[in-house]
Length: 352
Length: 242
Ligand SMILES: Nc1ncnc2c1ncn2[C@@H]1O[C@H](COP(=O)(O)OP(=O)(O)OP(=O)(O)O)[C@@H](O)[C@H]1O
Ligand SMILES: [Mg+2]
Image (cartoon, rainbow over all chains, first blue to last red; front, side):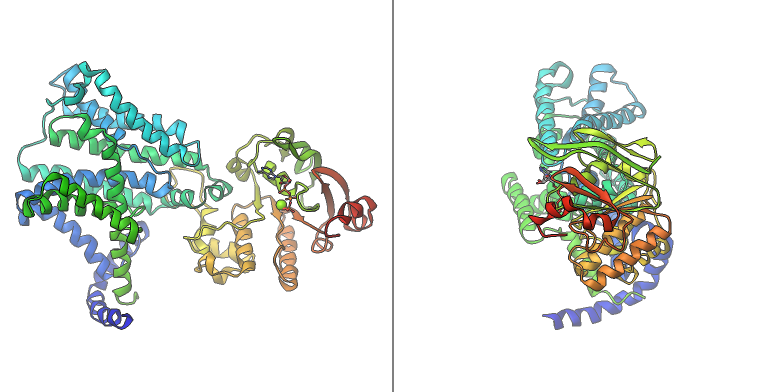
């Protein structure tokens, strides 16, 4: 077996070597901020970015539509990751954050003024996600252990029950469907989603690779050591939730202008929170880019490959989705994309 | 004014009085030994000083500052640091990363602060693990894991360092080397409290010994005085001996 990988790495090592000069330019300029990579890893990252940015030119309608949805879920999964994946305080309630943003946009249009400009509704909605995030985080993150997870879970249940109670404002079960979409043109619509997603990916990666990421990860591994280092772990836990709430708000706004409205099933139900976790876990928790990969993998599979190509019904598609997540949990707990990344590290040539 | 003043410290766990009206002072530049049989409350005293436990009664003053109710990170930032009895390095990070964490500022805006590679090397060199910087904690022998704990503590630049059984599990050569290094820290201006079960390792090292027994203050004096103190000998008679 090892001789097979050896032979593989002689071949890939050569490819890696030829790409190393390019990777080195990158490493010199950005390595300190994003981490260094070898030639193969360089191709994976920039090849993926190029593929994402050119998708409408090589993909068909169904694929591009699935990738549009995937971009939004990638934002959710990365946002969940910078908080739950890094600190180990697992949130089961992140859909309240995107839901807060989506509902704020829709309710402003429905209840206040249908003519309200996006210049107003978008920042207000993102701010609403941040406020809700702090409302959840401030009391709960002072606690250690499972209480935090339970509180986030209960937050979703409360939000979900509040919607029908105020149905004249929230639209109840059917929601509010009068929100303007960004555009109906599928190509333009794709870029409306994928460009913010890439920017969020860059910013969150930068943060994750900085001292902030190191502290958040240390909280997960040993919170007492963080305090003993003179660092206020509680402050950083709350900060990570704020850091997560803002891109969650952005994702919520994108989703409401993608679907043209809100309803509890699309935005709030706890299933949505669990899907965010599943995507992040499948891609590889605490890596930011892993969850991004996880979103495109799972959603393109579910909404394009199993739908358009395999023509399967909804229940089967979801069964496959969850079965895959289960397989990863059992056999590749570090996540598919983390495995791929370290695999490239091994089969690449020696660095320097 | 003493550097550290512990006054009437009491700590109860439910019905159990772990530390009972215990007082002692530490002067700047001193190395004080804190000894006592198993379960006498030594670690509890450290945990109270470090803000890990809420104290039941009494006060703790550091540099004239009341730190009784401070959180751990506040106590550390005021210049106190503790080497725990149990080592708990972060297994996912190499030695250098473990030390670096202890140099990071407590600020959510500080993306790239903290010690440089040279500074981390210096902290490690003060305790002789500078050639282990890239190893993972799980690869280190016991004595080096303990040294890493001390390096982390040094990295917070403490004025007063609390060492909880630093010699435990070390062999004679390692104990002698560590005692020399601790002496070296004192020469650099650091004050220290060293906890141990018995006086063996402390005899040469400390200026003064404070003895705890069942959470109570028992005696205080030079190592020679303590070695001859009859009440101390009695307290130890039941246990492992001085
Ligand atoms: N968190 C806690 N909860 C309940 N009881 C505790 C706790 N910590 C310590 N104790 C009790 O307080 C007493 C003093 O314990 P402590 O660990 O301070 O002793 P020690 O002098 O450090 O002992 P050792 O030499 O074994 O380290 C013991 O009876 C112990 O069982
Ligand atoms: Mg102890």
